[in-house]
Image 1: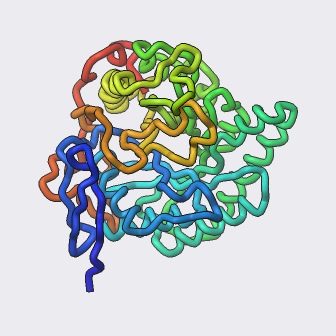
Image 2: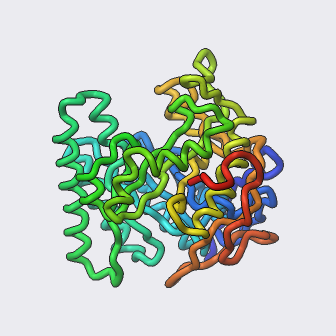
Length: 375
């Protein structure tokens, strides 16, 4: 018997309710295109463990949207069943979504072991066909540096021990393929030691927080990965990805709309989409020093981030109620991963973004293209 899903998709600016006999049936949104190499995803109610609240219906709707934007997502942790819900939703929707799983660490062994064990339980249940890697930690070194700079070396040693622990556990399994184990942190915290220990490095690259004028943000992002600390990953022969690249559309009432001169706004988010995405896609296809994969930050606004103030809750392409913002997604297609194993390639009925896709032939405008490129 098919379960009767109530799915909310962002159509026409306001969320439209779509009823379907099964999760493989939904109306594609013509405003969305598979132009993003990857996207950062956190479900709405997964960041407040042990207070959780996501339903599988909600995550199914999220995956239906994601499948129209990209074939890659990165997750941040496993608490509140977020990894399990994603894998179940991909299975039910028969979508072509590949996953970098995340294991969040905060220096507490209980946190780490809970997340690690949940990650392996999900891998055991759903298999690894669509798993691209396991990312241990997200900005753990940055958080340590901000709180207690003198403890940074100890924190790096701890992080590397957890990377090695996950790798050891993987080697004890019989998953049938090698799963890389990496880490994500602020670009400024990438070191030669961490790069040597990880199979890949995800470096958060935020021009907004660096006080970069929006007109130069795309080029700054590309050069940052080459000129600054993230380059240690490339020098070590490891895969280097931009873990977060995006721009906030707004700020909290009474909060600052700017960070060191960078201004949060819809037009500025649009300009970064226009100058970064297609140029980055072209560079990835062409190869060379600028051919770094990236994850657009992020899918939805995150209401729980109001505790941090300023622009923190407003980085999504969609607002917290999953309404598509007044943005235009570039139409150039990113290099798409092909479905493997039991995966499908469903992008909804009436979709124009199905198939394997290819890179667009240049930028949709702005300074992100040309010799310096982006991403």
